[in-house]
Amino acid sequence: MAAENAPVLVAYDGSELSKTALRQAASLFAGRPAIVATVWEPGLAAIPVGGPDTFGEGAIPPDPETVAAVDDAQHEHAARIAREGAELAGSLGLAGEPHDVPDELDVADTLLELARERNAAVVVIGSHGVSGLRSHLVGSVARKLLAHCDRPVLVVRADRG
Image 1 (cartoon, rainbow, N blue to C red):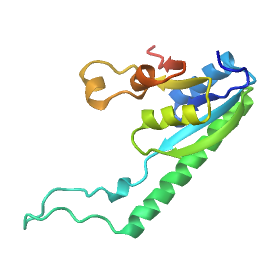
Image 2 (cartoon, rainbow, N blue to C red):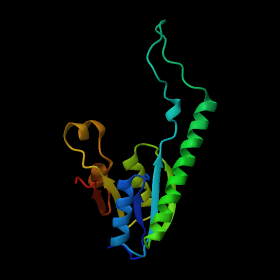
Image 3 (cartoon, rainbow, N blue to C red):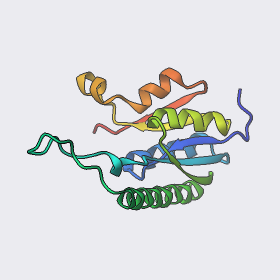
Image 4 (cartoon, helix red, strand yellow):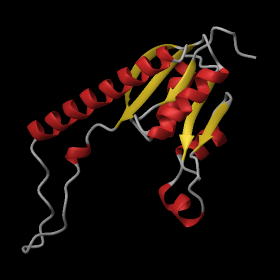
């Protein structure tokens, strides 16, 4: 059993579902520290867009300055979302700590690594409950956390009503 002061890791993207997950975490783990994690993906602007041109050549990748500017904007956005989540956590009785983290592999692996690094007692995540073919094509962060996390995972489902 995790120590009573071990933090709760809450995946937070600013959506209504992540706010609901944060509220649920606060009701279950009141008084604990909460790591409010917003994952962002660096390097998205470096991916060439489009196929071969009329000469059969590949798409031209964006210039490094554009890539850096997009990364900076994404990082700033993630930091702002994490701060807003930490403020919400504080208003709900959790000691919220904002944490914006770059996604090195995928979101689930990033959250798994953060949970291990910070010795989180539990990982809390919202899920839209996507199933069937779409779930297999897109994948599910919640599903991967449930399968691979070495600590409890609380999945808060979207209200279907």
